[in-house]
Length: 191
Length: 175
Image (cartoon, rainbow over all chains, first blue to last red; front, side, top):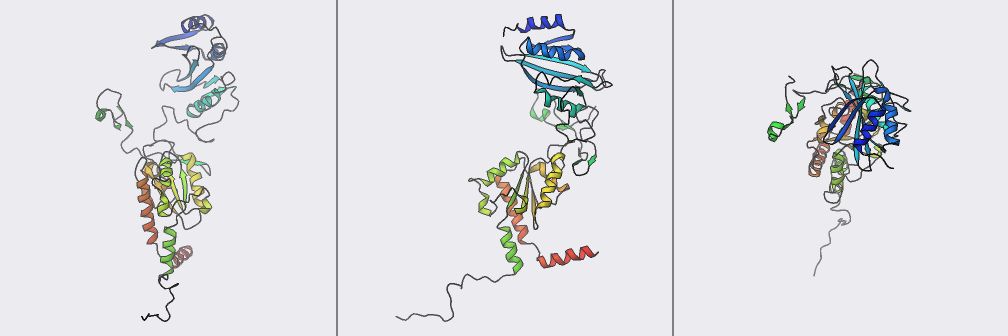
């Protein structure tokens, strides 16, 4: 395939689609696009630009911001070995995004995970069930307003959950170049 | 040369007979032939496998017969993180094991949830099934597992007569 290089590809995408925001960090490009355009853009990236490999689909919760959620698509092409990151924003009132599992079959389970952890519905997904927690678990545990210790729940004969004792926690690390003593996980006040 | 031939000494039997109580004999037999149910759920299972292999060899303590059927097992070794999704499955396997049965919580996760203070992890398997021996470590070395196994053997050795236990059990049903 005679795919254009990444810079040229970005220009092509920019001409065809409405790119809301473009960021470059250490040679990696991130394109923020409209939620409704993601499907068409994904297909374009795979068929015309050679991004045949979808590395990951993940959800992000920007609690307190509007729109609250973000979905990140990590694309890769083997020749010449480049990444491209696509992002779309999803508001809490309309927690939906079109599935890309018909473009990259691997998106099937990634989208199920995003649905499981954040409650984002992927329209057109062939089998949108929870993948890590059990069917009937009432919460979405990776949302920011979900407590780290968990919440009580009960599903007879399937599973139950209880809040975990945090004993002064949460125990968090501090990103720094200081010694292990300063960096190691400790109980720190949340302020 | 005169040889003494004692009357009524049967060398085939004498020296091979031990007098003991039935319960003590039963405890002795049980403790030296523990068939583990390996409940390997995380990295502790790797150490459990190491303990079963040639270098550490729990066969020396009579516990090498890992049974993957709960109906043939005596001791459940819960080795690893018990998630809530897995918890009732572990309980169910425990319920299928015939009495008498024992449980070893191997490692920090099985004992207390370990480092997983989280929504997804059961904070210790003792919330669901009675644990006889807790082994610390993350994961514990095979020596630690063997030490735990020997602790369990000592515990089984001191178990009270089954007749007494039966009596207590029926009394508890009446009240």
